[in-house]
Length: 467
Image (cartoon, rainbow, N blue to C red; front, side, top):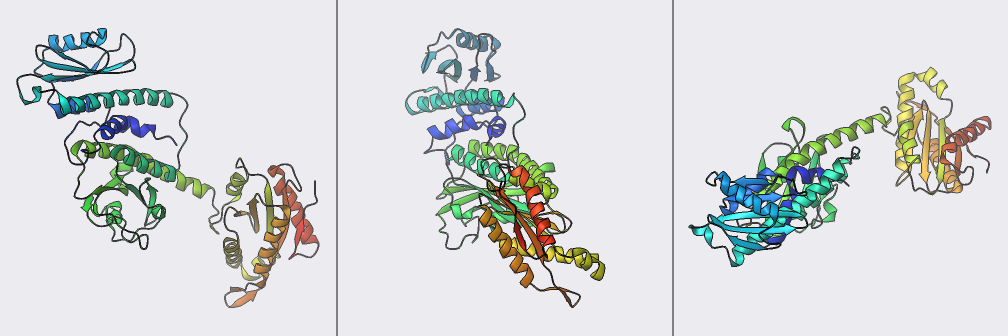
């Protein structure tokens, strides 16, 4: 799964380092943090410590430093610091040097440098002990973010990235938030009027995944756009999972927005006790959600379009394209294909009308949905013809599936406008490796066996001859 675009947009690498090094203080204490690289994170880091300037120097001798400099620092003074960074004259790791305007602290990570100038003559001048450690930690975090950004640029400069599914994006978002903030995260989306949990982080209850939320739950209310956000001591998911123990503390629930700033879901972050996210963490979370929301929405829209393109509108089953894609999946050790065709379907249409024919197709599709479960796929591939693909199944297993469907249909009662009509179907079965060495040959073989079943009296199952 590719979550690097979020790292680019949200500066997650910087916040990751910050959180990892200030784990005990991140929820309540003010500290350095950033959300977008390069400029805002550098500026916020300077503002958090009241520094005269923060500088970063990337790869290459001619790389210009990125800096956030207070207006009170002259150009000459700024150039002095940048010159020292270029020449690396202030040391290699953890260097501290007193200059005329303040104390310069420099950290190195590989061939990258970061520096902060703390002013003298005020309360922030005491740079020692815990405060010095925090500054060094945050400068190292900034350097880590620079390294992450370099990897990101390499990843995103090549061919277009693959499109992730909504599920993988939601899970990636939940885990990213937990990694950066150290809190349990839940991601929900609204589709078709249903609010469903699509992503959970590692600390969350696994039973929550794919659960439908009660309408009155905090997460559902925010996801539907009824409120912009909630901070609540209640379980944000409501009673979506029975007998779920709610941890003591609070949850901050944020709206997740997609195209044109419209709500598409929500995210909850669980905080222990009466904790609150510190402002830098709030900014980071907001930026991650701002970047992730449109991407998740685009993936959901694409998924809907894909579903429509692969679904038979009448029966709701996959169409020929849908089942062919399932059969083409890599890594399946063969399988069995069952071809099904309703008997005397033209006579039904002629006698009762096309609406009755459509109802018969829906009736048969309902039986397939009832009997075909698990990894198997049932599809309407055209007219009154259906296919069932059972990956990994033997030819004998395919014949058993066909016989079970045949029996169930023959015993069912199809009623149209108070008049009954006997429905039966004929079946042909082929399989890999029993009848073919390739799944691409199975439709032709199964259809040929189906034709034999029709010729031999209908309402029967025939198996293709072995290869």
